[in-house]
Length: 345
Length: 88
View 1 (cartoon, each protein chain N blue to C red):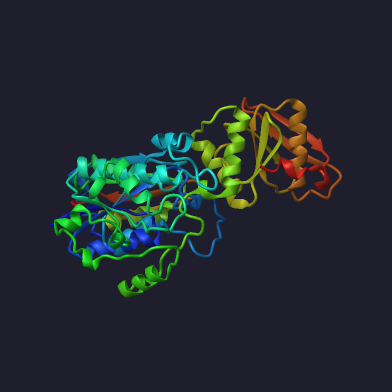
View 2: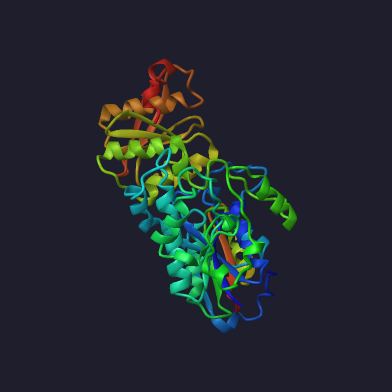
C-alpha cells in the first residue's frame, strides 16, 4: 500500500484532499505545523470561562473524522526566517503565504518522504483560491522550490495541472481526482456532503494571524518600537491579547479586555511592570518597554479609564515593578477625549 | 480510531511526569507527542497543564494515535491528565 503525508490545517480543503486520496486505498497520515501565528488551537486559555461551546483543535478533529494519525510539529523558531525574510514577499498584510507554503511542503518532504517511508505529499491547494499563494503560476513554483517536485499531489485541482508521479505511476487514479478552481466554495461543499461531512471549519481570513490587518499592524509597531525586525514567541502571543496602547515609542500598555484575557496576562505579570486597580475589579495592564516614572502615572490613568472607576474623580492603582517593589498611585482616570486614537496600536 | 482500554499495565513501563504548565495549546500536545515518542508501551505519563484546552486536545490526540486516556483531574491551579502509552 502506498503512503501519503497530508498537510492538515483543520480547514475543509485539506480535509477533503486527504479523504480523496484515502478513498483510493492510500494510507494517509496528517502533518500540522505550529508556527506561533496559527489561528487554530492555541487560544483556549485566553477565552472567557463561560464560553458556550468549547473550541476544538480543528486539525485534530479532522484527523479523527478521517481516522488518521496527526503529527503536530513545532516549527515556531525556524518559521521566524519565513516571516522576517520572505523571498516572495508579503500578501496584503504581513502574510508570507507563498514562502509559507513552500516551507511547509519542504518540511513535509523531509519529515515524511526523506526521513520516513511516505511516498508522496498531499495538500488541499486549489488554483485561484488564494490571491498570493494559490495561483496557476505558483503551483509549479511551490513544487519546485520545496524540492517535492512531482511528488506533490493536489487532489482537489490535480486535473488542472500536469500529472504528478503518483498519477503517472498509478498510485492514484487521476480520473478520480478533481479540477476545482477559483474562490467558489460550492464544489468543495458538495464534495464534503458526498463524504457525509456536515460539520467542518470555515475559518474566515485564512489560517494565520499574519493575514489579519490589526494583528499585522501590532507586529509592525513592535518592530518599529524596538528598532529591529525580530520577535520571540511570547511577543507574538501577547499581540493576540488585549488592547495595545502606545503613548510613546519607548513603552506600551497591554490592557486585558475581559476575564479570560486578564487571566492570560496574569501569566506574564512577573516579567513585566504591571498595573491593577485596587478596591474594585478592573483589568490587568502589562507595560512593555522602559517607562519613566511619569509614564507609569499616565499608564495608571489609562488603566483607570478602563476600570469600573472610570467615572470617579480619583482611583487607586498599584504598580508592581519587576524587582518586587509595589508603588501605590492615586490617579484621575484619563478622560476619553485625552486618549488619542493614534495611541491605539 | 477507538480509545484503548487502559490501566492494566501500570507496572510494565513505569510512570513519568511532563510539566507543560504555562504553555498554550497546541504546545502541550506537541510536548506530549515528543515525550511519548521516547516512551515504551505501557508507560503512564502524568501531564501537568494550565491551559483548559488540553481537556479537549490531549484526549483527541490520544484517540487519533491509539493511546489510552487513564484519568483527568482538575483543581484551581492545575490540570492533571494521565495517559497510557499504547502500541500504535
